Image (cartoon, rainbow, N blue to C red; front, top):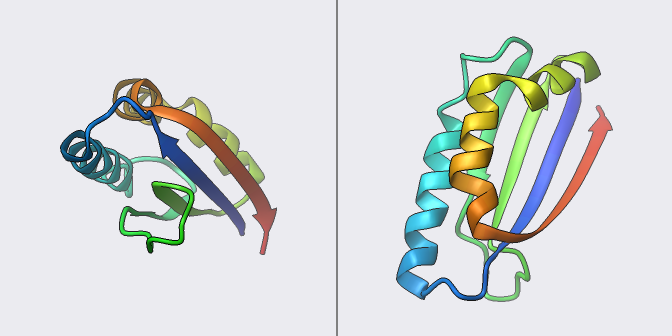
Length: 100
């Protein structure tokens, strides 16, 4: 199994109300991919970090293997969420992929 973890920071120019809305849209969009992409075992987005956090949201996903992760990266439904709901609103992204 492969884990795919991403931390994002939202753009500074977003108001607090916009950040709340954007985080919910990202969560709904990414979690909505479950069952639609071959090899995707589980996908969760945490949008409720503690005050001590320096990231605004976190993706925690699991894949059958590395090839499944590669397929997810280019899958049209994932690309649509990434291009429409994530990339326009984020300023920084950190990723860690690893085998379990």
